[in-house]
Length: 152
Length: 138
Length: 134
Image (cartoon, rainbow over all chains, first blue to last red; front, side):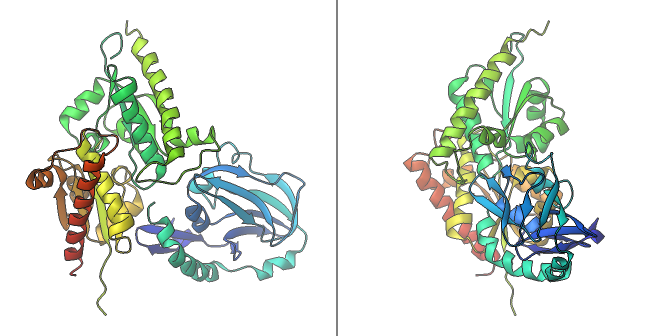
């Protein structure tokens, strides 16, 4: 399993970045295949948020605009917006998530996916980060966040 | 105690890193020290897992209610691993899902919303204690 | 460059008595107030459930076990599943040494209990400093 991920450790926390995905600066991953993509939040995002209690996902047929909020989730403390890394139309939502949003914490890169999207502009994928580049970005974010999550 | 004399143990995870653990712990104490002190007791989860004989004997002879903070389910899993069985299971996260307005994040000392959640959960656990106490062992 | 490690603080879960509650609160005070930048809390239930991160940290970093009573659940667990803690505190023993009574309630601490918790937190903090060579 270790080969599937890049990872970094901070104190006792291990943050994983799955290989073979693309990433946005807003901590969202994209698994693209042609003009379709599956989207979810990264390990860092779910960890920073804490245990997810509620999720407000988009609905099938909704339009997504790159850079705009497309979902939000609520933890015991705060509400987090999830920013879309691409533009497109939602073709499928993860029915597992609304009754069990904690799945995003347990398996952010697998069963915790949020939506499948028909991409409006495949070229937008070129603006996303490789796993290696996201790992570097994440290191800086982790350093900033450590005090907030140190109690976990 | 159940009708047949089996004790009822309410065992929280007491997770120290999250508010859920503190809420579950607080709710457990409300049940065993106040609401149902004649019927239920608690014991140290760590003592149980570390193999303390007295703790294991107590759990084996009891009906256990696990009170877990989050989906990691440390109390439920460790009770089963230690030879006990879980007669009922409560999750603080589920309590929060049913009470969306009660946001809290305080771990060390419960704030007003944490106390409210604890009290709501304690009432539910207390009712389950009553149910288990009424069960006929035949 | 002399790199000083962070110290893992492991409190017993201590549901059985108020000493466990004191351990827990003193540990949280160390983490939040007294030594927030140099400590990490190891959640004992998670550790006992085999959680990778708790185990990983305890194997690589010094730890201090904070136990309520002589059953030493935290100390024994850390020693058994990672390595011997660098230091160990038994709250019951310290209270006896200081001539302080255990709190009456295991659910919450009164003013005297809070004073005891702060004194314990200071004691633990001093030991952390020694572990880190300060």
